[in-house]
Image 1 (cartoon, rainbow, N blue to C red):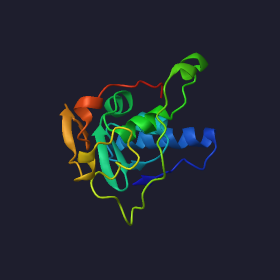
Image 2: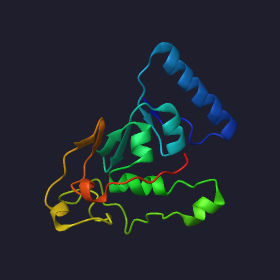
Image 3: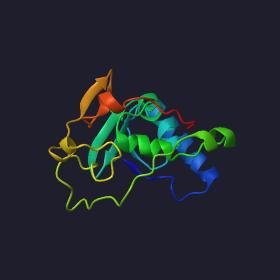
Image 4: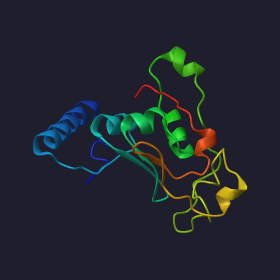
Length: 157
């Protein structure tokens, strides 16, 4: 388990650590749980990504699926927050800005834990926690609105 192993390091040291982790994983055929907020590092090191919100997995899939065609509204918001290096593309894209503060993990809301901040929330979201369901080959999301809101946003990570 590697919990934010490069978050407080300067860029050159980060690159060395990331390359070391990738090499060790490849040479030793290691499985690694890599916890990070840096989606570009996650994409570089991962075969599968699990996005969590309030301690629950809300999306699971390959880096291309989760970061290139996110299904869950929280994942969509995370990916939309990643800056795009091209200023022309950056200025034209739509960011998803979440309203309010995250609920307390000690007192999560009834129903979908993301519903208080979700731009796609409907009354049914307040009724029960949605299961992590398959919406494609090896791509799952815990959201009842996936068929309606699907679609891809494709950042450059």
